[in-house]
Image 1 (cartoon, one colour):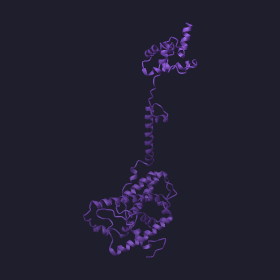
Image 2: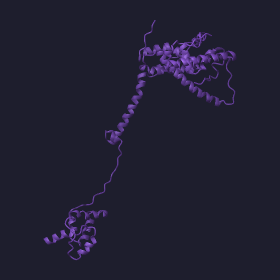
Image 3: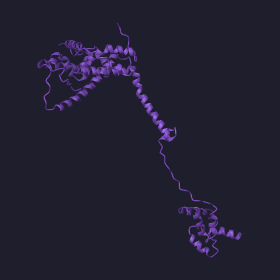
Image 4: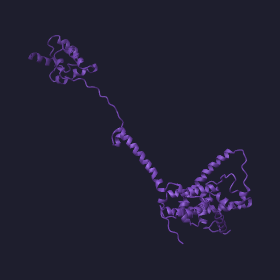
Length: 189
Length: 173
């Protein structure tokens, strides 16, 4: 059954977009952000921002891809601020040993998601949009506001780095995905 | 792990990625955008605030300057004090031209007429333009009142312009 196209400014259509796209946007952000609460906050903020601009949305791009673009940008901003907070945490507990990882978290967390969250957010977003949501490179380029060539480069770099990280994890053991102190540990953008 | 240029991850990693992401269940939280005021109101609110501020500013400037012209609002008020002109009463001038002995009394009369001493020379110089054409030998008679006073002591000091007019008066009398 083909869904009716979204109409800009329609409250009912935005509610339908939220019901359809929110779980997928949340999963995309879960692949970028290690903290589930942060993923939820960023996803909700993205829908708030999209709702405020819903009258100006143009149907030339898929509405879900448009919301994804907003959400990925929110996640990138969150990771930048989290990195600054991480520097503060390191300075605060300077000289004290870090909390050991929770074994329960280690058992639950899959290592692929951990490796994905270790990528720069733009690379992780390209991987998820391409291989999970099924967008082609042109749609991803339109959603993220870059060229198709850039998307191809990002996908190639992300694949190479993911394989390298996963092979290292197989030999050394997977790092904790959700540390007990909920501290973010990300790669640089 | 087979992979192509278009699919750098390979099918095994892609299946694994989909399985792990499908296992993530978002929390059943209510949409937060519902608690927002709405797109139209949020978009209009800053514009309404800006227009209100501009209107208040314009009204206050209008009330302060009393002019609806915005050019006037930026002008500064400057108070200019013009010096009070000396009393150029033409009736007092003929008294000065009676002759040299009457020069000092006429100045005293000017003192009575104008309370400011600094303005005293002006009435004495004002008759000059009318008197200059007549004398031919003394172009500047008013610059040296003292010699004229000494000459008037001879009784016929009518060489100056002022004396000529006084001479006419005396002859006519």
